[in-house]
Image 1 (tube, rainbow, N blue to C red):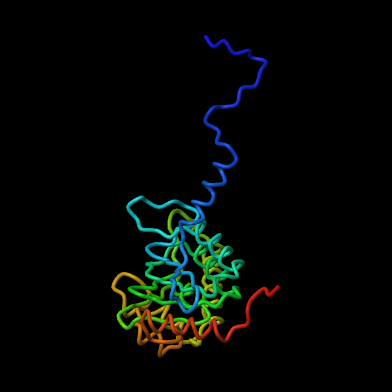
Image 2 (cartoon, one colour):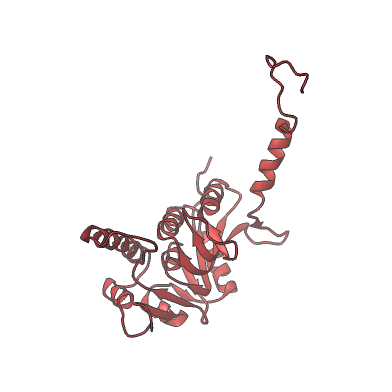
Length: 243
């Protein structure tokens, strides 16, 4: 039996001191590092979007994921940190949660920070709007991008309203891609609804060179090209949020 008086308050012994809590917060903020070098031309931040974009539902531990609740505050921190001169976004994603991916894409599109995206491996599904959200987009020749209609997982009501809801989501994605790239609506919708290319699905897979020819991606290039493009953007863009 404890000899403590029930009328007294005894704080738990494992509550950290304020200084300790501050140190923990600082450690968490250092999880997503910026690229810095003593001989760097400009200070830039590298953000990777890899695996599957995870949204409101947690995926299996075996899946390589990009969690949108991590990316969103990172973008806010990058935008407000005036020491970071540019943002390089590396994409190798199979797609994922539509709402989460589109939310990230909209935030990137609205940044004053110079942004460049580089698709390596794949920029599939919701990776397409993520790739075009930057001010300049690059893709390596060996990469590919899958364009397909919106798909829903799980149980849904077989009523016209469900199909109408999917159509509205799809239109939001199409509108964003058309706004942020040079691809024509006719070509993009044609690729999305293609029934002759994928064996068990509707849609199209385009190579890096095809993506540039369509106007979906700005330039064909590798890391050095994307870095040079970002440097050029930094040097031609007025400083954001001046004193």
